[in-house]
Image (cartoon, rainbow, N blue to C red; front, side, top):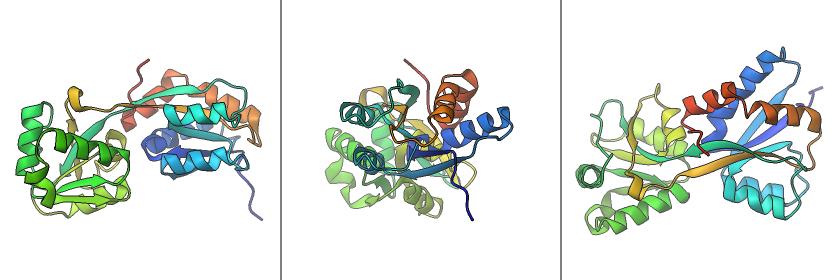
Length: 238
């Protein structure tokens, strides 16, 4: 007979790697007395589940603008959400390919022109990069090279064996998670073109174990926890 975890956390992909590390560190600090299960999906799908009001999940980690509707609809426990940090958009190449420069607009323009293929997601990060490409006047030049994927993990998986010169874009956390699996981080896109998403953690009103959920939420404000998220690519700024 399986035992239900004390805390079930639903995390968007960009906070998944940080919360895994933070949960492990917290469990060690309390001698593993609390069990934690982490599930993940697209942020908007997790928000919709939470809005239904019947979800058996204790905590969500989502972009801040997805936490607000949950507050407005009374889906959260009366505990202030915790700011986790922000995630930027960056570029990646396969480890077998030389690192591409994307730090300023001329470098990014050159990298896009020279790329053999350009990989984007079908979620907001990819949509934003399509706007960037269009705004730079490059869509007619590079449109035939663009490939779009449902999730960042699919982008990374393809990138590992993609043709030489292939260039991918996605959240920093998703790229860095593949740094030991054949994907190289090239850096963030220029600030003028950047969209940086802040993320928050919140407890749902239907959480089974609110006491332990609140204890873990409090842990998320510590320097130890912030370092776990920082190593995954979530930068803490207020």
